[in-house]
Length: 196
Image (cartoon, rainbow, N blue to C red; front, side, top):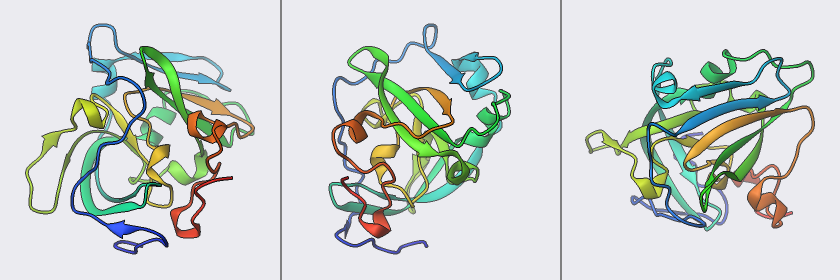
């Protein structure tokens, strides 16, 4: 599906910055990542514990609901499936919410996603990136440093929570931040699922 432009999109070589609320100021001593919800036992990880997890490198196309698409961006990060290995989820867990900072609240932002679609190398909690001709660089604070979820290209980019702080495992789908404001629950750019 690489370099396929979804309907209503235009291609850009830049990575535009769009976000709600304040830019989170990272503190590695207080930052945590929580795995919770429909699990046998919750886990809270420190920054060091998260950064010791197995990494992956993947090139992912990004499609923003505001109509830009950026092809060929390579990311390094922790695959969601590696975090899934750290908890035992209850039966019938089919959905997750990925949380992030919003105006000082570690769980103020969230995006809902189907778990089955996120088990490959193209569902990453990223900390660095590069373009086709560029060198590796940390993602910037405005792009979600220290950890931002980048979803597979089959989802609009608002599903990619910035300043990620945790994953809630769920049996039923539940609206996140933008979904509560009328955005699509499924957010497939190739079907132009922008709004409900």
